Amino acid sequence: MDLDAFRMLLTPVGRGALDEAVKILADGADPVAAASALRRGHPPDLAAAALTQAALRRRAEAKFGPDAAVMYFTPHGLEQATRPEVAAHRATRIQATRIQATGGPAVLDVCCGIGGDLLALARAGCPVDAVDLDPLTVEVARANAAALGLSSLVDVRTGDAALADPGGYGLLFADPARRGARGRTFDPMAYSPTWPVVLDLVARAPAACLKVAPGIPYEFIPEGAEAEWVSYRGEVKEAAIWTGMGPGGRRATLLPSGATLTASGAEAETGPVSRYLYEPDGAAVRAHLVAEVAALVSGRLLDPRIAYITSDRLVRTEWAPCYEVTDVMPFSLKRLRAVLRERRVGAVTIKKRGSAVDVERLRKDLRLSGDDSAVIVLTRIEERPFALLCRPVTSTNG
Image 1: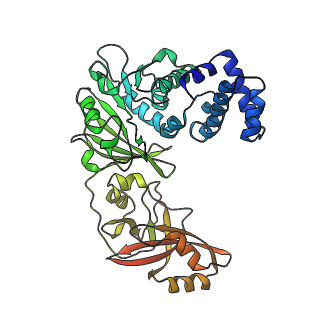
Image 2: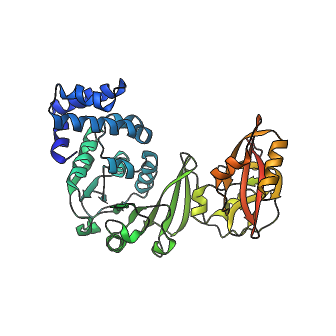
Image 3: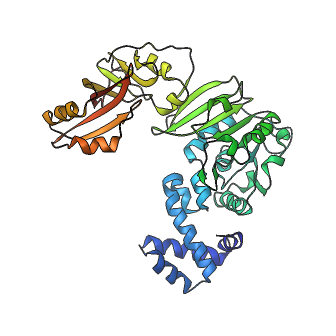
């Protein structure tokens, strides 16, 4: 889909074609039949653009919910766009600081993409100037602001992030592209714009929030900044680096609850397996806050380098699912298979940290049969591979 084809979609005729495409796909037509049906009443370019957009809206429902029905997308823009829940969390945090600009909008959003974050900022009441290098993406972001009734708070233009001047704004928001010709990149030096350019923008901004991949190497986090890892329903979605908004450090945040954890200076001891095993949320692991989670459950680590916590206490915490340990054994396929057969276990959930075992291969080699289920935790304790048989704790006592 090119810029001209997208602009056609914004006309009354284009909106009609898009509505038809949405209905055709909802009725279950295959792509060939859908294209043939739409081309009977519309030019080929418009029909193709409408079908592409209708398919993208269907894909976007999982991320954007009801808003997807009126929004516009590009394939890459949809993939990189922030989940609304995560964007709303950041926008609320930014708005809560009551940032003040020297003049004009409060936030400069560079690399705005299709507008996931700028829409959340506008909904939180922050006026936003947004910039993106790609003219089609700019048009899509502008259309999304209009579709959601936020145009009065948003100005989107085509421009090079590297040439932006963040000095006149209260906060710089940057979401550098993390995908190149060979696919997703995990190297900040391969971001677009590159990390040095991003840091130059940060240095010229009174405050900044940088959206980065959760696996960003710690050495790239600027001194004095706060690094926040965000988990949504148990899955780490992304990280953000905050500058100029208070003391630095490490933070983990759970959504949708909004629970947050920061470094307390806690140190976790190590010790033998106890009755309960806790698996810290990935945001706490990424933020190096496992010791803080251990303190919440009066626990200790099985191994100083692996994020599994054991405790004699059963504690309710959203920071770590809890499992009751029924068996602890040095890892042996033969022994593990015998125990599972004896217990008539026919279904297992396999978790691992610090283990080199191929999970899918193990699942096949176990040759399970039976009506019961179990959780197998594969880990390492003092350099030795272990298997822990567990069952989930569905209710806990404080």
